Length: 319
Image (cartoon, rainbow, N blue to C red; front, side, top):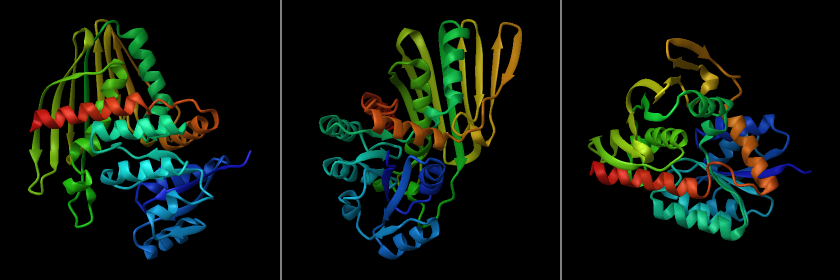
């Protein structure tokens, strides 16, 4: 079977670790083109990463006859229109997070993918790693009745002229960039959708949220909380408590960089780790499998719409 031929929308910093490196390790994938608004930038990126073709137009890439699938690495403000264009052109799409600018956009995108019979997958790479299969196994089998879920992700992001996360019109801000992971961690553990009880934010002079905190209520009386902060310090953890015990996951996002699973059941405590395969290689394998089989990946369809609806509700609560 010939490899899945992919094109990249945007000469973005995330593309090498998220797509190019995993593709080199996966014989079922070939990166054939990259597009940027500036042809020179696309050419430089292509030369650096040994990509055959550079394009100076996003439309040229989504309509490229030699491409089977598109990786949308652009800012969130360009996720909906270009993903819809790619789907219309018959391309599968792996779309970076946050999936869109709103739940309504997400619904339009997923409806278009369903109608076209194509795969549209949100790039929550962490969710395909063996760590998460183990986390959910512990939650379901050892913690008893679920009570609380706490998720935190903070990292210092320097404000520079080209740092897109400081531009609200592009979809920047802590909630979309960092907090979306926290929300998805909580939703994945609960296996249900929350009501947003309260939310607050620290706002940058440019309008984006530097930090956001929200309190969530899941069915069955399960309480959740998310905290995200672009001011740092570096921190990423998930704490889950049930009637029988407590689970703490250090670095649930990128376990290949080091992680630990702490389990306390009654008076017994133990530590676990899983294999250090990269989350991005797991994501790549999941995307290829979905395209080859037509099976919907975990982070697609209703999951992506529900995720964006929660982000919408948090923003509304936070004002």
